[in-house]
Length: 442
Image (cartoon, rainbow, N blue to C red; front, side):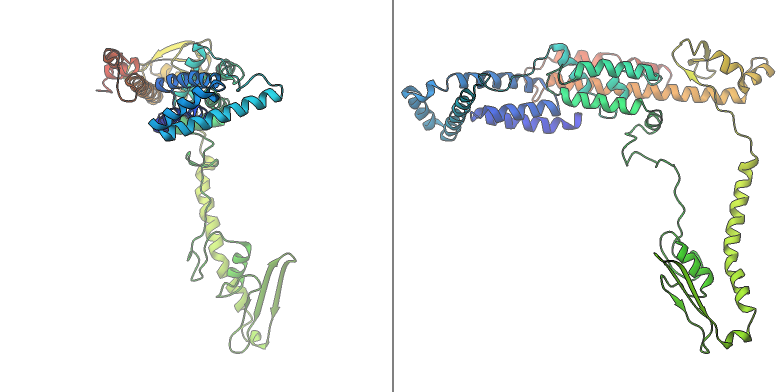
């Protein structure tokens, strides 16, 4: 949500202008929009001031219609005509709205403001301070959590952020972010894609397509001298291999030589597949020419099929590699055996039954518990996953500190407690300290 901060500040400035002009309804609307885009302490304070002044202006609306009100408006008009005119229009509109509400028997007046507690506002601020694609951060989960943890976290946050329960500014937007995070992390395929690419798996710019492969296409000039673009249609193949030198389209025809050789036409349409052949006496002079030319033109297809078969043969006879055993960096009833990598001494946990039946365990038994190539390769993957997770946690911690500093400094740094800013700067980040101790971060 950091990218919306500039727009939120613009809305806050517009709200201040409307408040100065006496247009409290517009000022309140722009202030609430600023809080929705990016929550700041200045916007919260300004919203409270606007609501108090709005209620006071409504209470004094009837008294302002008297002579004393007229004198006050005259003096205000002399000081600032545009502001006085705006106030007068706003007072008139408020009086009309109040009279209409009384005529309809509605004594409630303006729409009632939704209540919320400081705890509600804190939950909203925490969610909105996360980026839109930080799904684990939004739900306060770790990357090795299971499906049950995702459901529990979603139920808890959905109850805390539902618009009927939480009236804090920005609660609707925070509820949408929580729903989106649950939608991705509760789906196994979407979660796997998110863990791999780190972006929204439903976005068309998020990486590979669902199949992960590009469909083969034939470009211009792939077969002989004939030219065509895009993929080959059945009509193109038929005309190319059976029609002779040219490549006509629907309803195309091939003429013969100067003596009226064989003519061929082909049509692909709603009526089905139709062919027409006309032969003349010129064909009797060369009876074997047509069958030989057909086999010659079909030769590229046979070669293509043969190459495809040769490429597929190694995969048909190759043995399927055994996947690495699953592991976790936190102990649990499932991951009940603790191990340590050889290079970085990273602790990880595996399932006893799964690990004992894996070829790595057989390799350890053959080497008398000395690490072999399979174990070293597996533990290098464990260390890579551990350091990547530490880097991600470190970056998130740095971002959180920067957001807190920006919030503390405020818009122009007026009245900032610089000692508190210095304390935020000096707060340690555990993941960053671990990377420094491992020599992976300066």
